[in-house]
Length: 425
Image (cartoon, rainbow, N blue to C red):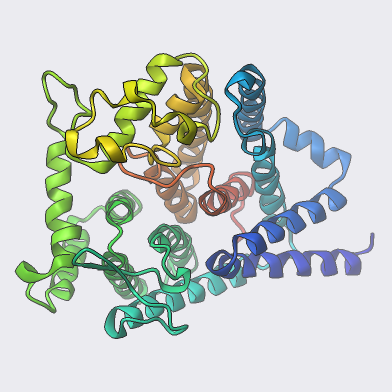
């Protein structure tokens, strides 16, 4: 294949990568289709020599071990009727990671242009949410979601109030690439302050408590360690954020109560343990899921109940004994809303060791490379990926397609950075 044909193939791949965030806003089916197309192009383009390099890569060995365990767990849990699609088709995400990192490493792909377009998409999403907050509808006419006395924002996702997770991950790419490309710019500090304030305030407006906490954790760690050790910078951002939030009477603001006051109360209550009922006995919906998951794990400690089977077992009466009374009838869900409890209940002790052992190795490799070469994008992406695993923080299912595509996209960028020693972005 000549250079011209190569350029055409990589041109198509570049357009798919640019459009992926847009597809995620409007259709799971389209976004799944795009990553499948990208993977097919990769399979057609790859040669044996490149395959041997991939197979010997430590990160992909870890992912391969996870895939093998999922298959073994499915076979051994057949009597519990686990979901075969989730168990056997998980391989498409590691394949997508390999494919995306391969294309990003190509000389034909303009990484700067991709990250620029993603930054523009991030800006549009945030502006749309600000518009929805002011007028009650976004630019497509989607209404804000009223939950009790709190208005939640879904933006382009309509009534699905999960867009903050998407914003957080896009912001990590934007922030890391901004510092990389503008490192010598006199205006870098201004760009960082304005963009950070804007994103923090936008995520605050969505009403998504868990992702708001994740974003604050990410910002604190990123600016503290990555060449911004001066606390004055972070303090300035904090003060400015409070000033921006102070556009209304905070004492009467239901949004402020949900995002700040209630978050503080939840964090405090999380640290308190009931001596008789245990640590998970709390007046909190998510802790009812956690308690159910633990009881499920106790009954099936080795292999769990199988992927996507939490929903089929959670109504068992014996699992409700340590749940706060007001949540006993609401302890069941499609998943436990936390990766640790999801893995323990559905994959058991063996799955927990394989899954988190693999990710510990992977994150160690990411951080080791950052310490060596100080790439801000690698560090930003690593921190945002790690915030997904903050203990007791409610999260969407790790295996839900929408969440997974976002997670593995950021993961793939890191894999590209890990093997691109020159960091020629």
